[in-house]
Image 1 (spheres, rainbow, N blue to C red):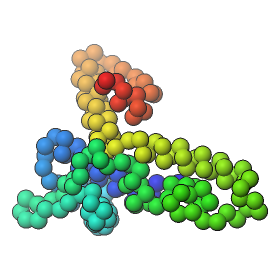
Image 2 (image 1 turned 60 degrees about the vertical axis):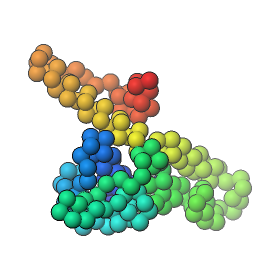
Image 3 (image 1 turned 90 degrees about the vertical axis):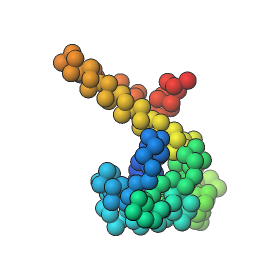
Length: 178
């Protein structure tokens, strides 16, 4: 599985829209989304069309129109979005649950490579399906707040605190709320 630029941009767009919803910013124009996320405008329009067709976002017309989420953030699984935009999660066709392709090896049932790739596919699916857009938006906002606090602390002390490598893991950050 390789996350394409299209998949990455779709996820970044949903995260930006989720942040806007959380901060009660209302709708965001496509040009503003493209500018904020540094995305090509026409490419973003095509991605938004796909997301709109699948029911993840909706567009409002008019002077104050734009795009916003069409579903609650907690109902949008990251894995669903990746599958919508990029297709199967399996690295090879014979390990796919959604787009199975016959194995080219002589004995598919006992093929070690297929078994390994099924494990890889399951690991990817478990992670992507575990997290919702709400989880990722929460972590993003928390990291932004931590960054702002570190900047303030650096101004006061003149030193920068070094980051803990574990800070980058979603589960660790989500668990720290509880």
